Image 1: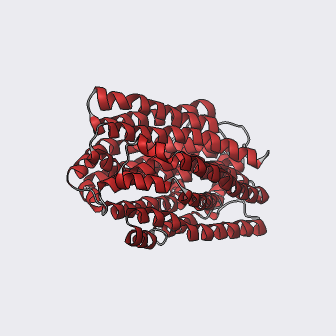
Image 2: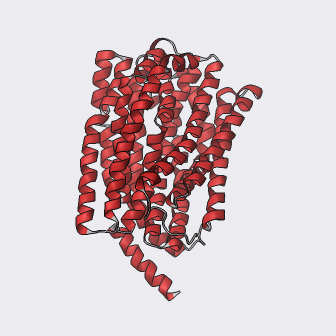
Image 3: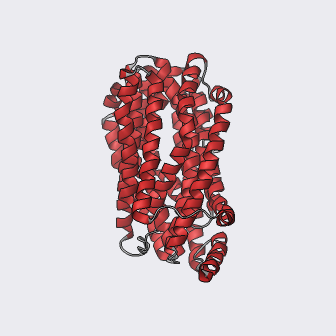
Length: 465
């Protein structure tokens, strides 16, 4: 593991946040653009069921990706905290253990979904040919979940080291591979939707390999496996990973309800929501990136006991979200006709695209506040707060609002309800984060209890060595 000092303990926090967010955003946009290209190519096949199948499959894949991100949150938080405390060897060790636990869990979880795939796709509203297509797509892609786990955890570890550009390269390589193989597999080989799935599998191989390569060549790679140390670390990892995964599972649960609600208005409405789902992460990529970038910055400074920098980083992130969202929405509004035409959206699908690409998207400011709050909880040693906030967002902030919207405005009301429901949750999230930071400042707590105990053990073991 590298002996370089923790990167975020000195220097301008605004600069750290912007640099880390921009480099992360570039990589994320590459991945999300591939999703858009997938949708475009599939739309070119001229079969409406294919686009709807992607929407249903995307809901299930969102669940698996959320699980991987939950484990990456644990890895990133523990690596950042170890670096902030000056334990570079410990950072390598805990990353190794997170990788092992993550891969084992990914294999088990992917198997569980595959066994219950028919019931799961039916539960979210897929029927007949659309269901068959979605199941075929998922059957090809789901077994590669362990590769996705390795890539996402490895990328998070690179960000924790302050290596935002290397983390960006990981996702860029994966995106380029996917984009290059998509037209070959879909059109040249004639594999249609299955071709898009196969290209994604190869892309995940590239994602995992690139992440491991950078970790090995720049930061010493993974540590030697010590079963006893792994067993001791399970509690530490679970203390963050379990609530983080529970937190992230909430989003696909809420998303599944949204898809099921919009499915009542026909496959065109489902296709419209699928298009919105592809536009969203590109339009607001910086917010997604910032939620990952702010974690290591808060984690390192929290580990070093520099609580004033923790608060400054949090408040700066909220301000940058507002500065970013307003012009992003303006661009969406001006480009709404072009975007709808690009995907060949008509009827309800076009109406949903136009609705999203308008002032309604300003409410993404509140989603951004929730993201930053969750990253703060995870790195301040209180990951279960993010669990409660996310479940609140995706139950109380989704179900009643979406149901009411659907009754009043139909398919468009589903999208309106989904967006409006985030406002009260964001307010609560902000208040919780402020209280946690104030408490940390007063008590001068530099690490969570579970990590403090392991730190004492680590000192004893390495002193004896």
